[in-house]
Length: 402
Ligand SMILES: Cc1ncc(COP(=O)(O)O)c(C=O)c1O
Image (cartoon, rainbow, N blue to C red):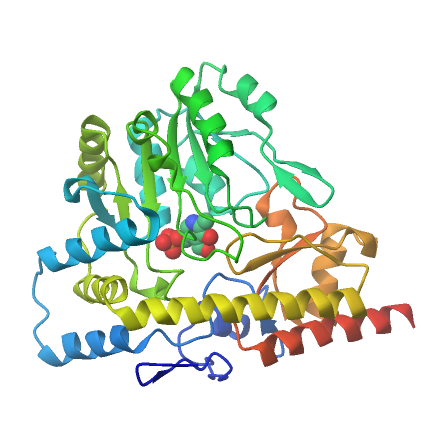
């Protein structure tokens, strides 16, 4: 695909070994992984180079050679505001924004700021496992509002949520929108229902929207805070370029808090905890990502490529390993595989994937209750790598039968 002299070659296999990559080098360096033959499709980053304007901006920043204390320039805010306005119709006021070195640090600040030890934070499991850690690290308790699963489709359980919000210690919900690992992109109607329950019961909504730019055709992301102003005033939204443009190692996210009082408390806690300020490389990269047309074209090409990988995965699995069911994703590049028909318990399934198929996936059980018997596979890689991974499962399964 060619756009303005820029070729987006997502098929290119780039050797990431010895690049200090958590995804690729951890498998060699750490116990638990510790197997150089493992093919890693676990942590949520991509095996693709970031778009050129971002790389060029980072090089320019490096070549300047002075890395003293920096400010966040007005052009950064213009780029962020313009991105959310043109892609989502969300008119963010510059003063609503603060930066943290990532979404997880922001969740940590939020729980610390708005919950006391012993308070409860609602999450909709199975869910991205660091959410549990963030809650417990702050001396708080996890209150589960399990997702309903029927006909291979997940939905929110509002009846259960109505009960959970009545718990006098419940203070907050950490919403995952789009949801990792099950891939739902929550509809406006679903968000409305959730938001109304939370407003009535004084539950603060922290909406993790880190995957919001990665949506499959036919689906549309709705920012929780644009459903209506009441929701905006009862929300903290976490966003970033880290998933969209593969910049997770740069460590920056924008936290959007329209309510002045909530924002002040968040920012004060950030200062108390020392979780503030932004690295000048991260700021430069984010500004480039949100402002260059080529980056937006790159994203559109990426989404097409991911759709191609998804279709390939679905066909391959259907034809070769029909015991595994693909949960149709609406967003993210993380695909949730129902492996329960293999008849293995969750530890046996892990052993099978690691030991027999030589694949490092994220095991379903680490996402909490409801995740046992599932695997999460990251398809943001060249198709040839995905093909290798699927062939490994196919072969390991045929050996299992023999
Ligand atoms: C839903 C979700 N939130 C947060 C993160 C991590 O965010 P960060 O690296 O910005 O802390 C991830 C990474 O996979 C994620 O999937």
